[in-house]
Structures are given as structure tokens and as C-alpha cells.
Length: 386
Image (cartoon, rainbow, N blue to C red; front, side, top):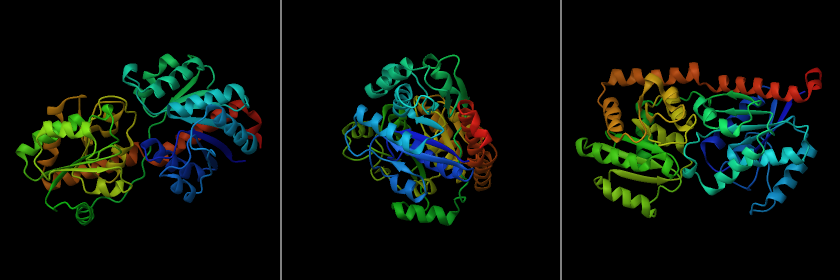
């Protein structure tokens, strides 16, 4: 009998955790594990992708979030679908799953899936703080807690009961077609970039923890010495009408026409293909960053700050600097841009090989399958005899 896992997540808007959940759902489906998704807010840009992938999605009837209505919805789905396990994703999903587990169908085990490295609590939003407070109060509720990085798990020890089963399963990435000169040329043409440009980009929603100010400072320095350098910024909030962002841009004195604000995009693979280097300048909060693994899987080298397990993911295939080290970002990016063509081709192969051997989607899915089976069987011993 196939395992059935109910995954609770805030929404299916574009994000690293949401994209990974869909990939994992497809991969576990091939391993006789049915992944169903319950979203707390209806719709989302990834909803169609989920349905087309054959993943059942349970949506609320109203757009406005209501805790009583959400708990009633979860109870109804649990009663109808009889999942063997409920996995909460991120803080909102984990908090709601814990409340549901406390008051409804207590025999169904709950798992927290943590995908964020918790730093200073004052840096977190009120909604996140509320979810963390609920999780701390209900710390005995989850049968298990998992995270996508060692650092992320360690940062949450204060809200995890000491007796709870824990594990770390890094994100997995599907190897993509290597970015050939023609693929890069086509991608740049779509974005209005010259073929000979040196293209450095950051792909992340606008948020203080993502380090966009540091990226702009790096870009300003790099632009003064590299006349062919262009800088892409893609993600929610990275648009011309963002006044705070525009203030930072003016302070960095990047020459006109060299900075490209792309906002939220659905064609992330195309953006990656246009790059020479992807930067992840985050200051805190990362676990195992999806955009870094996705770029490496296409052979694009990455320069990252040592936040979460980003440095472990990149290893010697790219550059790793301290958070907030603008000069370090400049130096690591310059090193890659200055490399000869044979050296850069080897670096590209190293990126792809590192993903294939250490962070492949099959490896991640196998670990998930084993862990979910163990948690489910611990609560339902008869499951293994069906």
C-alpha cells in the first residue's frame, strides 16, 4: 500500500520551498509515496504546475486566512484522505500542522520541515514570530523534525523537544542541460543583453536578509573596473517602483543601462542561462538555497555568503565569503570572470558533477522516502504488513 503524505504549506506562490515541494512530489510519486498538498491560501503561481504534475492540491474556499476555517479544512481532508503522516512546511505550515495534530486525528504523526536558518529573532516578521511561539508551545507535538541544512536544524534547537527524532536532508536538484554558448546567447537575446556582456545576477525576493544592498555595492565597485559587466536582479519586489531599492541604487552609482530590474519571473531557467556568475549575498536565514543548486546544475558558478549550508553546497566549485563582505564578493566574482575559457569550462563541469554526486534529486528523494516511511511506520506498525 502506498504511503500518503499530507503536506501543509502557506501557499503555492513562487518560492524555493514551493518549487522543491513540487519536484519532491513528482520524485516520491515514482517511489510509491503519494504527496498531497493542502494550502492555507488559495491559488498561487505554481498551482497549475502542481495539478499538471498529478499532485492533488486541497484549497480553502475563502481567500482570507482564518485559523478556525483552516483547522476545519484540514480535519475534513484528514478524515477523507486518511494520510499516514502530515508534514508542515516552513513556519506557518508547521505551526498549523501542530495545532491540528493536537486537536484532530491525534494518531496521525506530524513532521516539521524547517527550511530557514534562524538568527536574531528581532529580524523576523510578526507572522514568523507568532508561528515560532506556537511551535515552541507545541514542541512535543511533532513526531519528527527535519531541516534542509545542519545549520538550520541547529538554529532551532531551542524550540525542538530533546526527545524528538530529527534529521537533515539537503535539497536535491535535477541535472539540467549544460548552458552552451548558443543557449546563453538565446537567453541574453530574450533579455536584451549583448552577447559579449559579463552578466552577474541575484535571484531572490526583496527582503533585508537577502543582501540586495550588498549586491548593489558590489555591482557599483565592479562596474567601475569592468565596462562590459551587467547586473540582473530578479525576484518579487525588485522593480523600479520600489523606493527603498531605488535609494540604494542611487547610492551605488551604477552606470545607466547596466542594472536590470526584472521583478518576479517565471522563466528562472532562462535567467540562469544568461548568467556568467550567480550571486547569493544573503546576510542570514538561508538553509540549503535552491537557486544556488539550480544554477550549479546548469553549470553556472556561484559566489555565496557563508550562510546556512550555502558554502557546503558550493564547495570548491565557486566562491564563499563572509556575510556582508562586499569586497569579498567583488574579489570572488572577479576571479571567476577573469578565468580563461578552459578554466571556466572545467569549473562549469565541476558544478554539475558536485550536484550529481552529492546533491542530486534522486539522493534527496531516497532520503525523504526512508524518513517518511520510518515516521509513518512508528505510528502505524500495521502499515508495513499491508
